[in-house]
Image 1 (cartoon, rainbow, N blue to C red):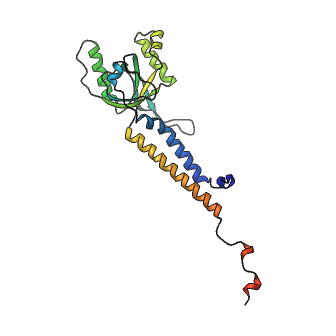
Image 2: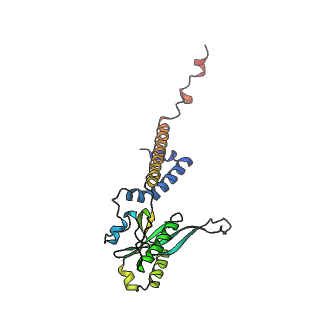
Length: 227
């Protein structure tokens, strides 16, 4: 392969395609792989089933303790200012056999999760079992440092010691995952990758073949053109 010729095929449109394709594949690859893993239910986690980063979780949530952090989205402007915050979800505590795991509820989930949290509290106080059914599917991720601070502060307020929190293991959080969406986005990335490879191959081949026009020395001489 002629490396110099290959470099000539890399134009601005190809660079954009490569960057865009790489970003899509990078962002969706993890969840794409997780989507094919057998799912662990929330009931299984209560029974002692171990989960870790990359675990596929799916099922009805039996209990929700409360939320320990909220998420707000905003737009950052070029002058350094930003738009007003818009609520985009809350992070809840879900009980497991080993302690607690976080769950990122989207804003669309908050109403049901709040209702389930109230019912869980009543149940812990001696009331009836929760009746709200909240189905959730997601992937387990390592909790970000800032979230860990809020998570541990909430557990401390509940009366847990540092040793008890450490015994629960590394803080994890379940993030919402749409199976169809994840696989669709990854498929788009593969299509874009195929298009990128096709463009590079076609241009590489054309550069090797040349323009197809005759060179000056190959054209008929002046004396040959005069009858």
